[in-house]
Image (tube, rainbow, N blue to C red; front, top):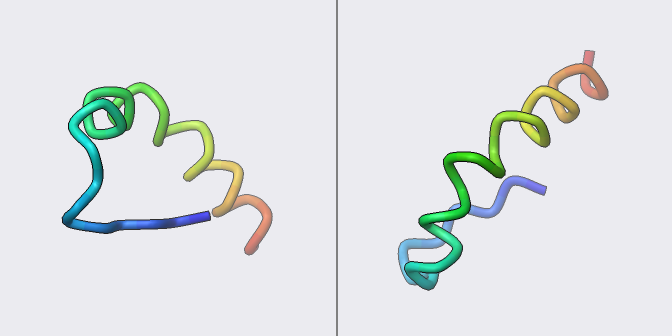
Amino acid sequence: MIIMKPAYPPLLLQMSPAYKPRPLKNLFTANQ
């Protein structure tokens, strides 16, 4: 799930740095 919305709440934005890396890697490995 790659959801990039400019209207994202600040709470999600603060969590995103630590939350993104793993899901992104999972998505890349799943796509390949």
